[in-house]
Image 1: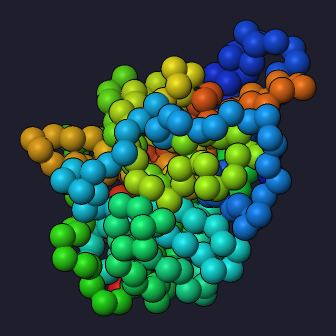
Image 2 (image 1 turned 120 degrees about the horizontal axis):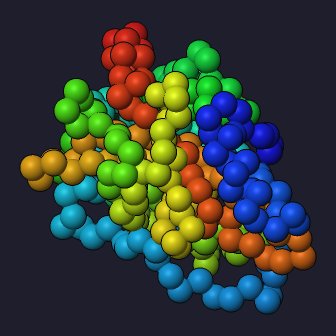
Length: 287
């Protein structure tokens, strides 16, 4: 699954690697949380008590929650996050859609474990035709999911980035998702915090030269993790959350002979402003 980056992203990452120990290797990991029902557990792993990589739990009175959806695949029990962009359409990551003919379960609510989510099922999906699983700047990791039944009460679409509001280097974004609170692989789902909606404020570190993606440093202990794939990066303006990015991947260093948190290095988001023409065109065909 690991592939090297290329282009501007590769050059920047290579410089970071040079500053690290020669025993560290750069690896890129998809964020969709494919977890077995009974994963192996290391008894030496500390109990997880922190929120999502330095973030906080989203409450029922937080208006940001009305734009989010939990995406579950019966095919392999994996899950992702998505953003509502119309009455019957979800924007997510292409890698969250294993097969466009699969039926996905869409959960509207704050916490999967409570059993209170309102459910819908997908009736169509599309991935970007140029999607690549190699995790480069040419990744094109965006996809759309359609569903019937309309939105549950209290939920509504988020507006997309526009000519004035979009992802800018050094600007703050709010990432939201149902993912894990720690990227240690052998922490069981029951202790990982997955399935519960959380948010975290981050700062955009750089953008790729092709305009398709931007990156965030998570080395200060804040960021996204497994299960947050496909989720939104918002910019808040005049009380409104604008969708400027789609969570795609984490970039991490793996030291030898240690248990390592994979979600505390760097992350990559697809830039919604760049993909807006594709989103608009595909929305018309999918609905």
